[in-house]
Amino acid sequence: MDRYDQDPAPAGLEYSIVVPLYNEAATLRELVTRLDGAMKQVAGDYQIVLVNDGSRDGTIELAESIAAENHRVVFVDLRRNFGQTAALQAGFDHAAGKVIVAMDGDLQHDPYDVPLLIAKVREGYDIASGWRVRRADGLISRRLPSRMANWLIGKVSGVPLHDFGTTLKAYRREVLQDVRLYGDMHRYIPAICARLGAKICEVPIKNVRRPAGRSNYGIWRTFRVAMDLASLRFATKYMARPLHLFGKWGLLCGVAGGGILLYGLIRKLLGWGTFHLFQQHGPLMAMGFLLILCGLLLLAVGLIGELLMRTYFESSGAKTYAVKRVVRGGGDAARPTGGGG
Image (cartoon, rainbow, N blue to C red; front, side, top):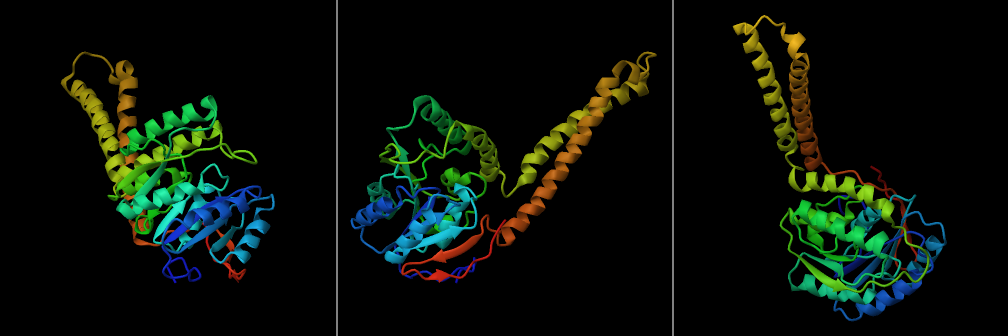
């Protein structure tokens, strides 16, 4: 039993396909059928981990029925809608394969592309990331914002991928073991793992229109992506040394403020003119004091961040989800697992 106190999973599995689900009843059975067909092309045993993320359309009943019929299917039912990132983390935590594949449940990812990604991991890559070369989405609402976001993420992270947004990726299990996902950070896993030395490649994949239902994504997610981009920059460059970020700006503010006050002190001591210092240079002196205060605050934030990061790295992190139950192949319901973060 691993550090998350889960029920034991079958040993010797080569592959786990993790699929987060949110109102995917219309496509779920077809998805599992196609995945079973696609995985026949790959040597080695596999499992399909279906994670229900608060669906309201019959996905729960259908997924439980599929798990009861198919011994390769594991159904993880979350207590409420936690978001795709938390659902993926739940799936990763319950996956037992040496290679873990993540994909969406709406059939916009072709299951027959999964063996292509697996083949790249077997060649020696740690991460094989899907690349939707020809997208079927709207130009203004999806493709142009995505292209701009991918360019910006590549510049910030230093990982030159063409398509960070697609969920379809294959990971060697060990590269995910020390990765904990928060916010909408699932799209940045390659960038986070690259900091740890992961070898990454891109694989062209098909992108088809969603056959049923409506997309859960839209241009409104741009703000959330921007905020997570700031988190990515911090996580990839300053995660283990926050004082280097806050301390740098704190010292700059302190030096600037100290220089201003020193200038005022020298003028006052040398008696340059008969003026009153705060009457003629009041705003400048006030700026000097504020800069010193800002510098001290930034240094304090950096020191607190250092202590928090040490606590984070030295302890087992809390989960960002709470599992109500786990249904493994054969229909056996596992006991609830704790969690929450």
